[in-house]
Length: 338
Ligand SMILES: NC(=O)c1ccc[n+]([C@@H]2O[C@H](COP(=O)([O-])OP(=O)(O)OC[C@H]3O[C@@H](n4cnc5c(N)ncnc54)[C@H](O)[C@@H]3O)[C@@H](O)[C@H]2O)c1
Ligand SMILES: [Zn+2]
Ligand SMILES: [Zn+2]
Picture (tube, helix red, strand yellow):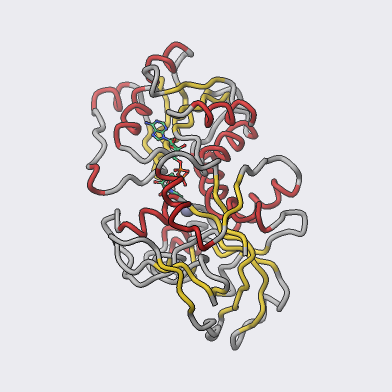
């Protein structure tokens, strides 16, 4: 099978021919039909984060396709089922987090395209218990971005506990942001989309953003203050400065939802104590979502409540796709179709 492989943190991905993996006990083999490129895959390929994956590895945690083989003992899935392989490749299933609806915090978890090979290949093996069925009404091409960008921002909006008409500032209208703003609208929020690129802001308006701010042309903090301040700021941009702007744009009782994961080399964000305390600000970290969250994301999409904006690419052009995302040239999400 063809796979895109990270061989070192300093060289481009390599397209390699590899043997099709055999599903082990409890695993399924999935023939990938579509696989999204998340900015996380780029962080993985560059070794940006404190905990690094070990090359060689196959990135990808938005892989969607058909089950073609079952490993020993698999009873909950069948050959022909269409499933998504998300970031949460596996969790222990019995710790306090796993049994209380927080499997995404399990300390024993494995992650697709990071600690285990992911979806940038014609086939991938996955734990049968952690793949998520894709409804017939959702195409694989659209299911792919929903598998990380969708579920992550759906969860971020859930934990922000938005009340109707509250102002929600979404910083970064890329793969995650174009969906974040739709979930914020679905729960009744008034959306302020912030990016540094007018094309992305035009897309935000088309998708229902109530206000847009170009942070390259004006100070986003002042612009959001002029609108009355944000009740919630969701940060999806890959730069600590943006986290500080998002914090500063909050009004009293505000929630800062941290989702973007800038490279460790960019340093920490600073959190001023005085306004945090006096304004009663809550700072919330949010990491992907559970299998149940992803099922809800698919169900919402099947109902026609969300729009996925994505562009089809070929796996052979993976490095060009990475360059396009880094340069801000990508239309929301790039999806490799097989
Ligand atoms: N917490 C999680 O569970 C989780 C899950 C998925 C991805 N992520 C992380 O989220 C981040 C975003 O991922 P993505 O795939 O959406 O990336 P992306 O590259 O598609 O989107 C980033 C967007 O930020 C915009 N941007 C850049 N500078 C900006 C600025 N100064 N102000 C406002 N916007 C700015 C870019 O123009 C782009 O539209 C990455 O760091 C990724 O690793 C986190
Ligand atoms: Zn992702
Ligand atoms: Zn666990």
